[in-house]
Amino acid sequence: SGLLKNKNLVVMGVANKWSIAWGIAKKFIEHDGNVIFTYLGEKTKNSIEKLLAAENYSNALLVECDVTNDEEIKKTFDLIAKSYPVIHSVVHSIAHAKKEELRGNYYDTSRDGFLMAQNISAFSLVKVTKYAKDIMSEGGAIVTMTYLGGERVVKNYNVMGVAKASLESSVKYLAHDLGQAGIRVNAISAGPIKTLAAKGVGDFNDIASVFLSKAPIRKLVTHEQLGNAALFLCSDMGTGVTGEVLHVDNGFNILG
Ligand code: 0WD
Image (cartoon, rainbow, N blue to C red):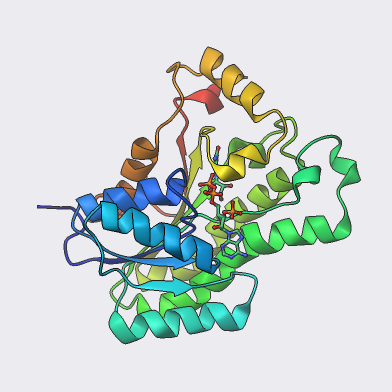
């Protein structure tokens, strides 16, 4: 049977069928997990409902959650607790920056653009963790999505790279906070994959073609591979792993 049998998992950040979060959710469903979705905006809710109907998984709980709003994050987990008094995992697959700041020079980043990227892409994990942990009474795993641009300079990634550095550091501090509660906190550092968010990054196609020609395994990573990594981290296979940034990037990060 599935590796997630009897586990309740919250997936945040499905926007459409290309979303990394959808690849992860499908894998969780395949492994018998009970998946709860949070979404931003009514349009997104409709598209998740369509995706779920196509998977014959129509009874999922869907909760609206704008992660810039503390009160809404709290309400989200209060509402989830009414149907699922215990959850075992949260997948945070959310990021946002101003499109015009994902190109050109980093020094041109605006103050509000910097704060917005940090707010949505990094701080949100902190608040989500704060409210999720209260219903993770059996322990479990929190997983977020990051990118190499948080460790090194990747052309055009700019303000989002700095937000990912903050996110990866938050993963370590949160892992430290919650280790004794049996809650593991990890990040998956994904190779470039064509999604709506990726389209916002300047010259994304160039980033993808350099990746294709140089990664030790000369392929783009797939949604399924990212789903499998999240499955590992969120299942009992992943016990012992916390505060980690797991690269699922066909080895690209080892190159100098
Ligand atoms: O190459 C890639 N696509 C990579 C993505 C490589 C490595 C990492 N990642 C990361 C992203 O930075 C992000 O953290 O993976 C995560 C998921 O991104 P994705 O699957 O590539 O993109 P997408 O399908 O657009 O999902 C991100 C979603 C938003 O979509 P839009 O396009 O509408 O901004 O994050 C959600 C939203 O659904 N989101 C929010 N959710 C709640 N509250 C908010 C918000 N304020 N803002 C954005």
